[in-house]
Length: 266
Image 1 (cartoon, helix red, strand yellow):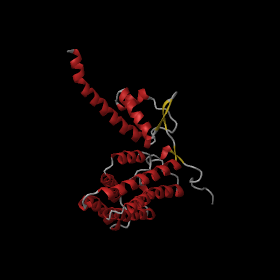
Image 2 (cartoon, helix red, strand yellow):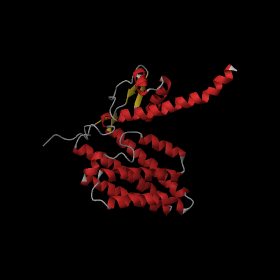
Image 3 (cartoon, one colour):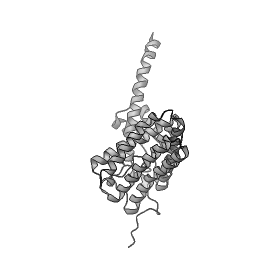
Image 4 (cartoon, helix red, strand yellow):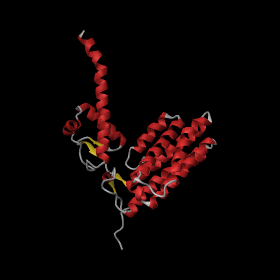
C-alpha cells in the first residue's frame, strides 16, 4: 500500500518540479540579459535557489538548460559560470538564424496545400506595412505594436514550414542577446535614421509572403536570409555611433571587439 501511495503522488511531484524549473529558467534568463551577473562570474546555487524560491534540483535543471542555450558555461571545478559574448558571436547567431529561417521559408513554399493557409501571414505583413507607412517616426506605442507584429510574422513563417526540428533550432539561435528577430534597440523609436530599417523590413515581409505564395522556394529563402541581416545592421549602427547602453538587454554580456569599438579619434 505504501508503494502505491508513493507512486500516486509521483505525477504531482514531477509536475511541481517541472513548473519550478520553467519558472527558474525564465527568471534566470531575464537576470542574465539584464546584467545581474557579470561575465565570468560563478553562479552560487544555494543563495540563488532561496532567492527564486525553488528547490535545488529544479534550479540545477534550469542552469543546465541555460548552459545548453549558451548563456552559461559548465566548468568541472567551478560549476556554472556566466558566458561572455563577443560581437562576432552575435553576428554568427544572426547569420545562423537567417539560414534557418530561410530554410523555413523554403519549406513553407513547398508544403502549403492551399493559398488560404498564407492568409494570416499575409495579413500580418500588410498590418506591419500600414503601420510603418502611416508614421514618419515611431512612438513607444507604435514601437511596441511593431515588435508584437514582427514576432507574429516570424512565428507564422515557422508554423508554415511544418518542421519541429527547424522550430527547435531557431529557438536555440534566437536565445542569444540581439539574435532574435524582435531584438531591436529601444532608441529606434526616436531615431529617424534607424526608422528606415523598419521600412525595409516591412517591404521584405511582403516580398517573402509573395515568394511563398508563388511557390518560389529559392527566392523566399534568399529574401528571408537577407531580412535577418537587418538585425546585424541594427547592431552595427549602435556599435558604430556609441557604446551599447548599459540598460539594453544583454549589453553587459557582450565584449566589444576592437574593430567595432567607437573611435575616440578626432
